[in-house]
Length: 164
Image 1: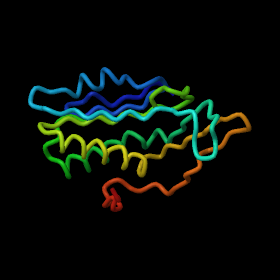
Image 2: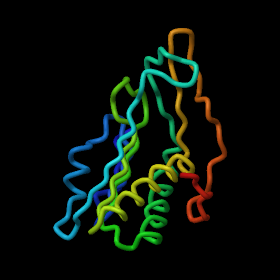
Image 3: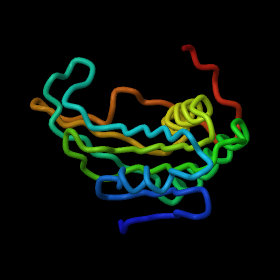
Image 4: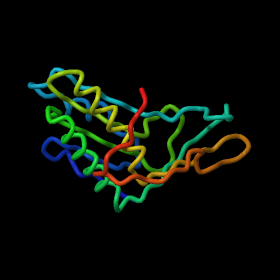
């Protein structure tokens, strides 16, 4: 797969990448003169998961033909719920990801922090529920395609209630 990008396009930057997402560039692009808040979430590969203390590698596969479309639908949901959101950036990595490197980035900017926090939180939560992306973990005794198999929600449908 070649690097796949759909932005930055106006106030939205969507990207699928085989390398570590450009976190600094995403942050800088999201900063705007009319915004007093930028919230950036970066999910990184960690060295453990439930019952496994020795995870050495993660790998992600995606249904790439539909991923950018899903990301765009997610951005539409964010903008519908938080009209003050200015710029949104969503990036996800596919392929092998060494421990400590970023796999996913969601950034939101807005004039005020409460909107940026809520939009970014919603963005990563809905991405995990709606994006056709699967994770493989590798550890000393073997490997597995994730512990949290789930159905993929459609974007544009109401999100399930979240407990805080």
